Image (tube, rainbow, N blue to C red):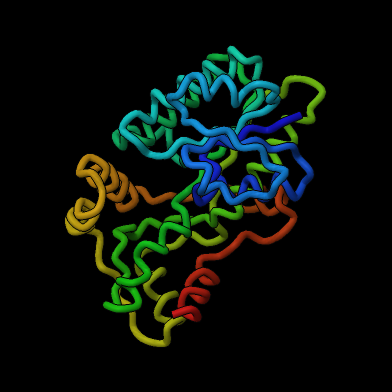
Length: 289
């Protein structure tokens, strides 16, 4: 009963592999660069990507269940649809798909619209699937820690509505639990959607205050205007992607990423422990500085 993990070398995927191995699952990973696949010897490695049909078919041979994670890319939708078709062709009808919270609402943001389209494809093709919809990743903040530490500013324009940032370890553990539940089920289970959120819904000012406490000095919130955010991102990523991130930030400001009633309690019950908190992340970054 082999579980195939895509995106296995990324921030979420590597934790998914770790969690599956800890639970005794047979794991296969599809990776572009096997030299980056630092996994236990029990993990089977297939080289390829989600647009390489031959490697996809090889990766799906003997697989029971799929973890589908495909990163933001210009061809993300094609990657998802090809993979879903090859999965069905290979007789794999059980999967966990990593979508995004509010995928059905933030449709002007390309990768949200893509993930919502993939959700509809999963439903239309009759998969037995868990759709995981994470909020903003706490782990994204590693990218801005130098700005916080060296310039005294929290620069992410996340606004005043509130965002329930989620830790990648919590995402991965829920994914692993759902993958094994699907893989071990005696029959086809209905589609289920789970919002993945953190324990606290935080505004930009809240996050700045957390950093101030962690560092013992004032940290200012940089404000809600995404213009500088887009310009900075465009210095090290494609301009289309920087613009897409701007569109996402604008929705943070206007609507936030707020959990539904019961989301935190549901996740705590699934995991059997408290969720990782942003305050603990900031404290760890401050201690390591």
